[in-house]
Image 1 (spheres, rainbow, N blue to C red):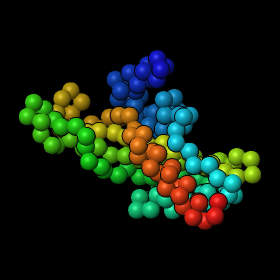
Image 2: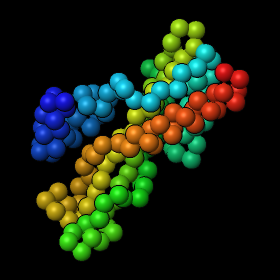
Image 3: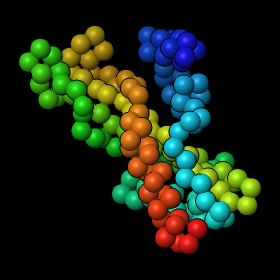
Amino acid sequence: MLRCRAFYEIVVKTPRLFAVLTCLPLAGCASLEGKPTATSPCAFEQVWDTSIAALEGVRLLKADKDAGLLETNWVEVGSATQAGIMQRDVNKERVKYVIEVRREGPGAAATVLQLREEWSPMGVRMRQWRAVPGNPTDEEAVAAEIARRLKAKGC
């Protein structure tokens, strides 16, 4: 946990370093360990196709089948926080999903990670997107949707 906090302090407090490290979304604190996973006896290709289908309505930024990585574009969602002493509803949040599909024995597994950022017109970091923890419930919902679709296919 200290390593993640140190990584966060360096990245957040050094904008130039943050710009360099934005290309490494799966490094350090954003690991997939312990994240919701849909496991299936289906072949890798079926789990891959089903993972793409489960992300319907969200544009894919990256679909690298050889590496087993799917990445969506950012999508704005409702903000859980309000701004300032007057509690104005002006904050924004956005999410992006990264799904790793990997072979596991005779089947395959899809692990879901949600990257989340918030933006506020107020405060020291006003008008800048900053990383916040992903919503575990949303991650579980995407993994459950992948599992549901695989089960519907007979896997």
